[in-house]
Amino acid sequence: MTTDKLVIGLGGMPGSGKSIVVETAREMGYAIITMGDVVREQTHLRGLTPTPQNIGAVMLALRAESGNYVIAQKCIPKIKEQTSNRVLIDGLRSIPEVDIFKEQFARFTLVSVHAPPQTRFERLKRRGRSDDPTNYTVFAERDNRELGVGVGNVIAISEQIIVNNSSIEAFKTLVREDFNRIETAWLTK
Image 1 (cartoon, rainbow, N blue to C red):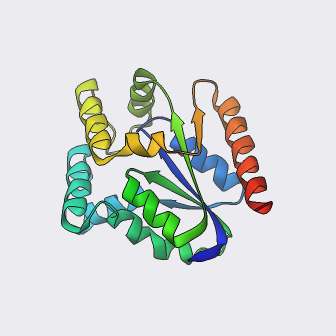
Image 2: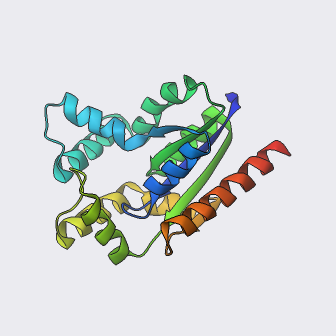
Image 3: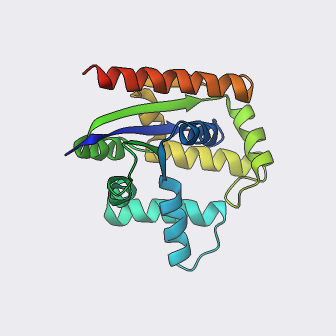
């Protein structure tokens, strides 16, 4: 078990504001590991175009082939090789992922972001990443796929839930405050 790193796992539905948390954490000096990047890499390795459907299918296939913890398992070496002693893992989606990170990192904390569905849909449409939905039907399908692999359970067991329903700057302030509290709590243990 690694005890020298503070590892924060980040959950939340697509479009909830995880990328703003990532940006804020990076500004605070955290190394960032994005679980979705692992799925996008695997999609590329399988010779598929990174569409929402293909990335979703690869995510489900990886889990079916190797277990619900497979993406977390692929992230562990990436986390351990970081020189920073503070790491944020973006995109936890299942309890087995949380469990494997807790087993590997003594100083692990789970944080999630919440935002209403319509707000998330509008954000994703504006973001325009290749795997973002182009209409509400695709958005709802993605939400259902995410909920199907367990992201709702991850949100439910989070030690902190940050509600993202204000300006970007106000949200970044909340994130910094929460991360500072987490760091202080780990220092006093």
